[in-house]
Image 1 (cartoon, one colour):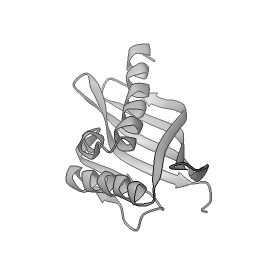
Image 2 (tube, rainbow, N blue to C red; image 1 turned 90 degrees about the vertical axis):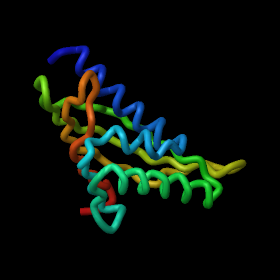
Image 3 (tube, one colour; image 1 turned 60 degrees about the horizontal axis):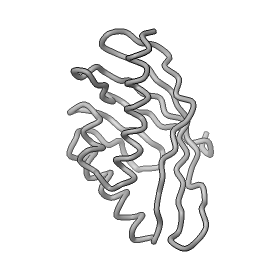
Image 4 (cartoon, helix red, strand yellow; image 1 turned 30 degrees about the vertical axis):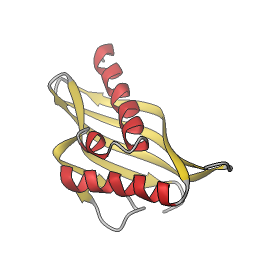
Length: 137
């Protein structure tokens, strides 16, 4: 595997976490393809397309503020399963943490990400993300 491409993939996951956690919903949505898909059992339906993805990220930030929390996405164990010039399959672990302002920190959920990435110029974009929660069958 090309080390430069793998580094770019790791940067994508770091960038996504920083964008959604800082409330940059448009920036987070732009890390997906225009028809990108987000599937998670945490939410009632898949989120498909940049505008719905942006709205999803905006709602995530709004809910955190309303709850008096700072939320963090902590991505670890990024495993590039397959990689070629145009596409990658990646799995990773994701912890979503919440810290109450002037309070304690708790784990909201532990999950595994399973992504199909596609090349977009010099960067990678998520074409499809499937989230699996550790607390569901």
